[in-house]
Image 1 (cartoon, rainbow, N blue to C red):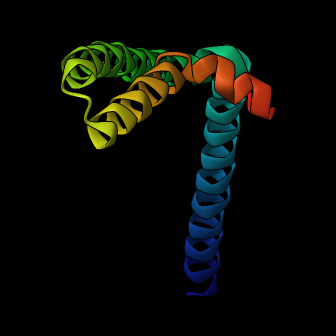
Image 2 (cartoon, one colour):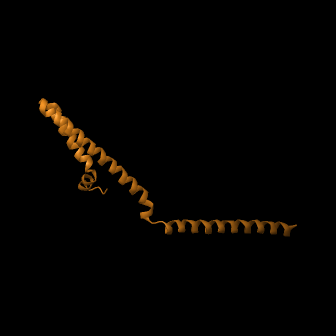
Image 3 (cartoon, rainbow, N blue to C red):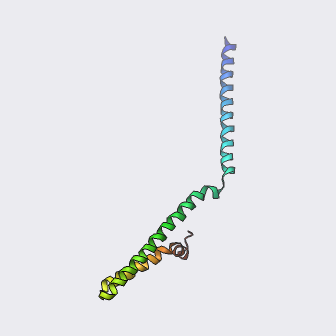
Length: 112
């Protein structure tokens, strides 16, 4: 009876050892392949595309603000309305900042 019990324990122990070894070997290869196959540039590429799209949309909105400010200024000057002139000038300045957002961020030291 003892032989059957020890052989059963040996078989189970051998199965556990082989399973642990196989899991370790497979996971190490998978992690190593993931690290080697992908560099930082390929991981960050979608983020850079979204960043470019985001800043492009902000610049486009800035151009619309410049146009709106110029239209408001052109209607406020003949009416001699100082409040509307001031608001139109602020809209134009805000549009210029939004249109050149990447240059403004570079000036502040933020890489965009």
